[in-house]
Length: 327
Image (tube, rainbow, N blue to C red; front, side):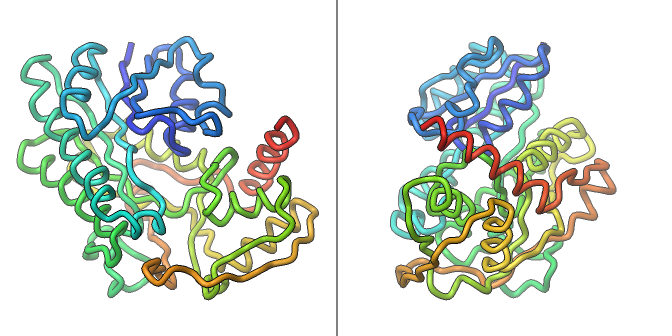
């Protein structure tokens, strides 16, 4: 039996990760979150009905919550995904963003350092960083050995989280690995301000128009289907003694402008939508182009994505359509 702690279990990627992990009956998964919203990936995937999944209502910013959970459930592995994840929201609330993304990570890392002394075993840990952590001065595609610094509030919080995790691994020789994924999409992401959920809501919900931020239509991003992201996270943990102390890019090589993503989604969904552009907040800073090199994870772990943009979007569309039909 492997006892696994997933922080931020109410989140989009974390919920899909729990769903994947729970398919192995030898895994016992404990999720920690402050609350579970009714409209959440966790509920859409019906994770509460799984026999090997449990939830603790706690806060990664409270060290005792982490320590008590690790001890009570004899945790072997931690996937630390709890974070403030929306760039626009982070810019509006910098103090809470740093508190959750940085101090919450510090609590996890400190528990991973201290608790093995009591438990007599190491706790393998994955910390979720982001492609946003890279410096804007880097050439594309980003490589893991390029500088990270983070230009905006969200990006800088992820860069600090990233550096902290690797410094703990180095300083204390701990099995900690950092993941830097690109934009992850898929069914049941209910952060409606994100591009793909917003298109889905416009197509299958009650929204008449598709509203996009002015100036974002020609930005280039790399898109990775959530099941491939989840597989990559698990693969990094499965190879922890080859990956510890390092950061790994996770991407698909599917690079598109926002315009191309919108048109593809509408075509695959067989929909036509009027597009309205709105001014974005002055504090909301976006990076013009971002994409990653994944040679490292392929060479060390043998991971490659299984979905391309067409197959991933079609799965996403099917999932959202079913969910809106039931709602």
